[in-house]
Image (cartoon, rainbow, N blue to C red):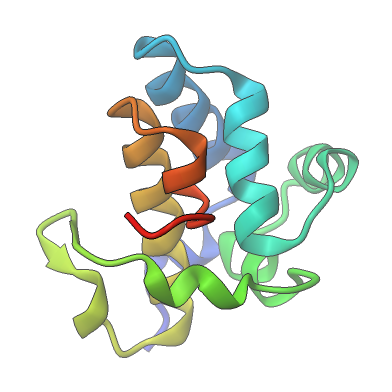
Length: 118
């Protein structure tokens, strides 16, 4: 079953992530750093994909490399426990949502990027 979120353009989602981060005094560069960590995209690739209006589904399916530490992202996002999500694509989307949420909550980049045990 294809979720309507999968067909949404990543270019519609991205400014929402940036706005959420900026509202809490975080930066667009930090949002890009989080996206790069999770997906393996460079800043230039992220901008190019936004300009191409690629779908959320394609954005994640074409990602150079999902970070193996992504499985360390746990907890609830949008009322759903990440560990309970079975659909691999939805899980990746929620991973990114959770990372942006942590950024907006003021967590350190080391903790957000799972470079140390949190």
